[in-house]
Image (cartoon, rainbow, N blue to C red; front, side, top):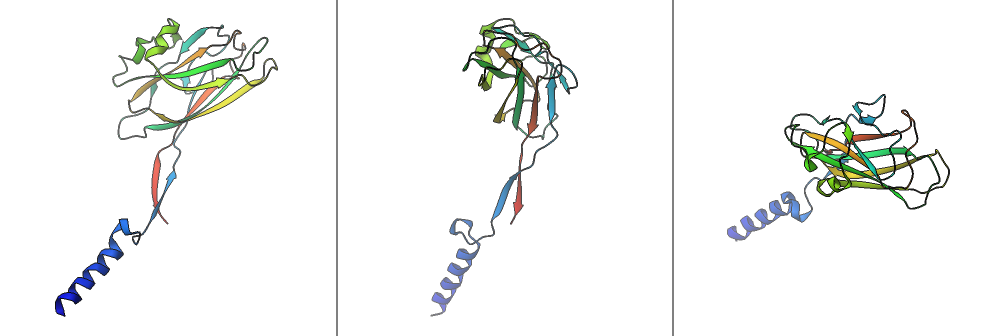
Length: 189
């Protein structure tokens, strides 16, 4: 009988404290947004020319220093853009990231803060999102959000490609992308 009492006590302890049995305390995972980085023509944290980008052309931002590790690796980005001319519903604007661990060797061998050398450079970049033209009104800002962007390297550059048949609006205040770190934070309930 003494052996059975020991076994019953052991089984009760295991059932109370073993997480796989659902008896342990649970905790929630919350998103804890960090300080946003604004990539824009003017009034941004990082410079990038979005204004008057012609059809079938691209642009690379200046270097974005995401900080030394440890740091967040997941981000959300919200982009604002306006076109000038006759819109075609469904035409696209593409957003990519080129990354580097040393701020020298960037994916796609892009030149920072300059026009994208060719459309083929996009082949070696990480596509993070496509903004599809969704209205025909000229000079109206369109907005799209891209989530779960994984940027494990310390440095990055945003690359924009205008795949529409018209240029972006000539404005240094309407176009921008806001990159926000979205790390998870564990909390007890």
